Every structure is written in C-alpha cells, then in structure tokens.
Image (cartoon, rainbow, N blue to C red; front, top):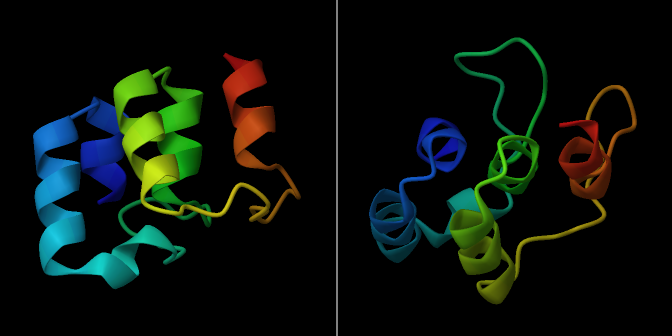
Length: 78
C-alpha cells in the first residue's frame, strides 16, 4: 500500500483497499524505516488522485509520523 501510494497507482490502491480495508489506517514501516501512512506518502509525492481516494475511504488526516509530521506537513514539504 505504501509503495502504491508513493507511485500514484490509484488502481492498485483501490484494489488493496477492496481486499484489505484495514490497510487504510495501518502505519507501515517496510520497506522504509520511517513510520508512515499511505496518505502521507501520497501527499509527499503529490499523488492527488491517490490522496483523494484514501480520504474518500476515510483515511485519518491527523496521524503523525515519528517526527510528528501530519499528511498536510508532508504535502507542504515538497
């Protein structure tokens, strides 16, 4: 989910959410050592379509990473 969000692969994100809805809110640390969410990665890499899909499915905008950055802060960083 993290990699698909980073790449902007809307179809893959939708497929993963269909089969594993719990991935929406999971904080994953693989393959990257930083704790992140799919929404954070979509925001950081300017993947608007993926971010919109995740938000429409109920992604939490208030989740913070280990540096206390939210998805909004990731979006502003780039």
